[in-house]
Length: 127
Image 1 (cartoon, rainbow, N blue to C red):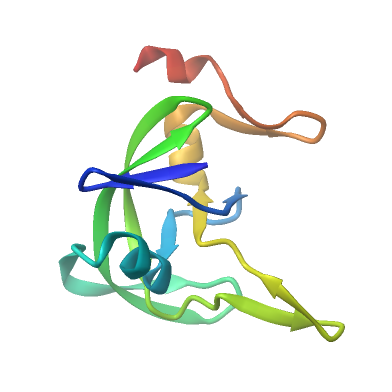
Image 2: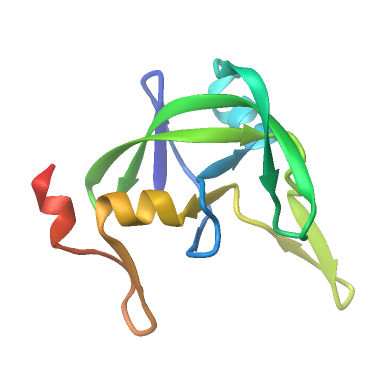
């Protein structure tokens, strides 16, 4: 998929996570791709993170997610504590730069199909 911010569009690896309530992006990826430009929240939010712990998030950005040619405006939280890669069985595994949460998926009618992958359903046609 692709992400657009401030006129710049880049390819990214995304994980569509029905267990995540919000959509988040790695700060390092965001800085490298767009040079920063995010906004600060009035006060930090505590989010329940992948590893079962809480993290504080204090940055966000209004981006456009581009999936199969559809442009989906979305607010993403910019996460500092986002691991870029892990070592599994002695091999480095790159983690996604973007996690698309269930709120975004529900809003735009994004479904996951075991055979076809990520699908945009009829809800998207209302754009």
